[in-house]
Image (cartoon, rainbow, N blue to C red; front, side, top):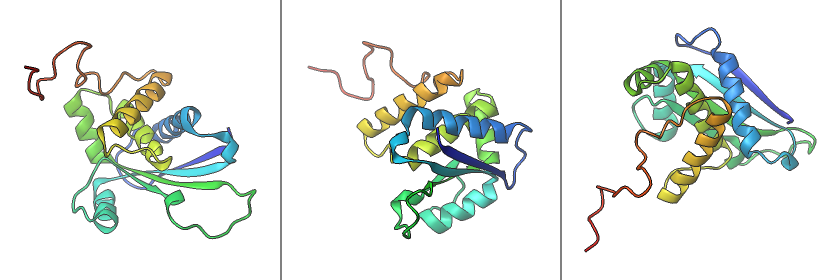
Length: 175
């Protein structure tokens, strides 16, 4: 696969192998979802902290709080004309250390597994996947689970998913 993943550590108390884990997760997501016929591509993953993500979330999304991951897809913006042999710039995935660590602890996951999941989630956003509707969310979650399985990471949605045939208690019963 002709995709370059650049990982940088800007802030936060990330594990020593965080860059490797982030690159591995991004490449796994791309292996499952990226069409190589589109040509070579590049993306970046930034390991940051809550302060940086809070600032970016406020400036670019109008939300005055940190979040676990932000994705800035460059393919959505107007791009200047470039050499057709140049790689496609997919965008940036930015993670917030404190939020990722807190969520991992709350959810009983290792920080590395949760970080890997969020990188996969962010890369899928760069490729145009979203979760605005139930159908979009289901498709994105299935892809995330598929990618994470290739990394040996358990389904992060298993605890909230209904078993087959179980009644949905959020909906009224059929009468």
